[in-house]
Length: 267
Image (cartoon, rainbow, N blue to C red; front, side, top):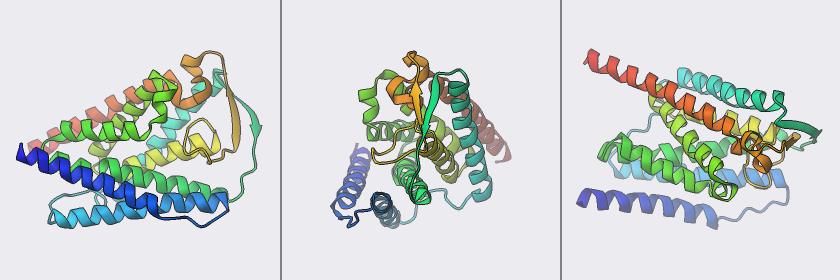
């Protein structure tokens, strides 16, 4: 019980401390792209500082796999991310569940892309950084997966307003990227896959929801079949995403189990 209470206190202090410090820093800019950049940079910077501070507090016993498998993990994440959003978009567009009805000019597109990338790094460090590794080290892998999936889901509170499928998609997305994380043994894998999904899905296709001020190159409209097209929420509310997420969970869970078996045999 004592171990559980101490762990809960650490998680609460980490999360609330990060949230409070991230929210009190003012961003002096009238340019939307510049404002968004700092709106993503500040929480990420605070997250990195908190992660390092808590890592030192734990006497460096909590290992966050960043340097391990850098090249292989990043490449795997990029490839999987492209397949993930590519397959989803192809199915929905070619089946005419989503139709492109317009194009938009975006000023400082590169900065919007960088901002979206920073946001993903922050989310991944929050969900699969210190808190995840603390729970995994102090308790077990299932505890880490359950708690961090819950945190990730409630961070995407808009999904609850959108309906059941969007919530399921958020949960299965987190489970898939966690399986990817464990199978590739580096946080770079989910960072790259998640980034590809957000950047292409939101900034290019306009079918994935980020903060309200993020623009998109394309404007799409959904068919009347909300189960397939996602309706007003487009890609993120489509059952096509649910099916692909479940398939990816299975693939990377099997890969994780095989890797664990090989490691056990070598020992």
